[in-house]
Length: 132
Image (cartoon, rainbow, N blue to C red):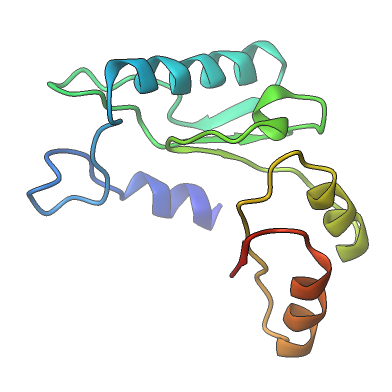
């Protein structure tokens, strides 16, 4: 997919150099993100990119993308403050909004469409602090 191809091009390293991603803030945060990756694999999500620690000085984790994620999986229910993306399929926008609004969190949401009216309609329906 285009998302996987674009993610493969991201570079990690010293944030004071020309890179796209720096390390996690601490060993503790790296371990937390790593536990989510292990949970996603254990619960049956498909890891289509990354999913490994980067052996380098610092607390690096590869950009990781999971597909075939279901609502009951930990990686779908909780916020992961690290380079991990969970992809869940939906059939209608109403289903997606209902799913988003069931979350205990709600810091941010993103709506991607070419139709401004659709974006505005659903931005007003989703319960999130920020909607892009």
